Length: 256
Image (cartoon, rainbow, N blue to C red; front, side, top):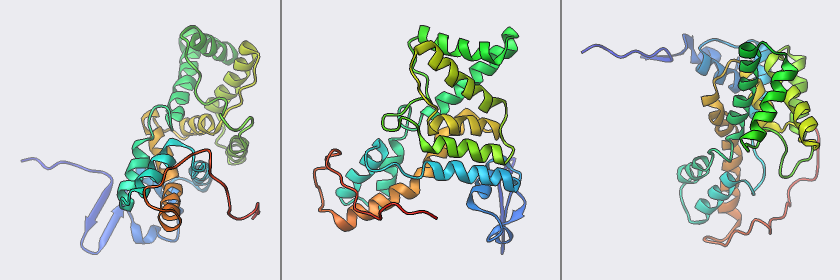
């Protein structure tokens, strides 16, 4: 029987090679974000790409106790479920409407790029067409606006770091143009949120839409784990969890 092939990791006695690099040589030399890029893309990112990867992974690390993934995790932890089951509960709630905005926004951006090519039109015209087609189809454009933030602070930081590291390109230009056309057509300002920013940057880095939710999951796991630990160590089992009754009692605002 023919052997099946893998190009990712080669494990031999006393040697583990990730994409050809001995893992022990990578340890202490590259960041986790760079290792993620290497694992998925097969090549080592430069320092600037690594910085951008790290930025988008930190951006979604946690968003409090109210998102569906946090609630699912807390409910599982309250029942006494082990850590893996609690994490699985949270991860399994990351789907089309929670976390899925990254993938959907990447689709809007790619539609705009396709319109430029197929219709031989400008980026302004293509972005306008994206907005108008969404309105015709009664589709809410993903990646714009936020239920809590009127101006998501993570978006500006992501874009600043992307520009500083030379990653800004046509996909970022497109989402900025769509944002402008969305306001022009609706009369309301719906700023790019963190999901939209991450979607544009993932396209700049050459990732497919299908990987988008995985980036959200990778980013969110540490936050979910923190909620598990807190729930199990500070709350009574099988409690009624009311999302309107939470209170923050951690550190006051502090800065690096």
